[in-house]
Image (tube, rainbow, N blue to C red; front, side, top):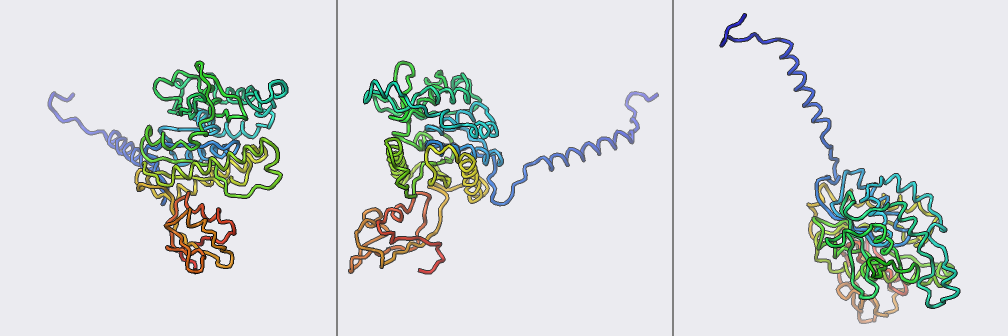
Length: 393
């Protein structure tokens, strides 16, 4: 028996055990640490996600969320308009993206649009809207549930407008968190003339898109870090005659043009935090196409993945301004140019009229953000085009 103060013999097994445990721990730490590939965004930077309205084209937002999840990117705030508020609310409530996809594939026209026949027949021009509110509100309730903003797992703001005052109202802000999320989303989806206004606490609210379809200003004021803004309302393709027939189609087409012009105007001289603008290629799809769900979701996924791959390794490391940018060469086809001067009016820093009255490019190589170059689409004779920087003039 050993006396007090004597040295105890070292057990070989204990020493071996400590060595094995230390080795396992070190190996586990190395294996469990996130491996960052080249040009992959590191998931440690706070950012705000903004989801625009755009009718069913907003199903692309589901693909956006899937792309973020794959990279471990979790926004600390989501701001949504119209269908962007619906997808954002489902995410904030903890609905998995795979469940959103499955539910989206089941949605049919009758689940959203049912003509308000009685109102239209008896009240005529006094009818509050063309379609009934009940089908859409049932869909929202099914996806979001009967909860308030205080019950949400994640931070969410829903963009609406007070119909009587014209004031933009963001549900989810302090003092507005006691409202039911489903009510706020229904208001945000209440496109005037299409769906009736939604009454909340005695006041009527409609789609916030009438003021700010891509609510980046609020995101800049209330969020933290850079902004990842998803715009599904871009419209850069011609619509066929059949796509603009009837009241609803004409109204929706006009709305598409207004929303795109609005977004371009508010972002043209962006002075807020770094803003990454993602515009999924869905402009060729109608706002109410029920047979394009898979294409829309995948378009959102691809656009987000491609944009994130261009950013580098840290969201908080991007410079102020709008991203991503491209270096492009602007060209004018003199044979097509009629000297109307439209390009000079839209972009006097880029064009002027030469002595012959033809458009001339002042600075052929341009650094384009995602919203630049509207003058290419707006040229009435399609005389303006762009090429990669290294292309010959």
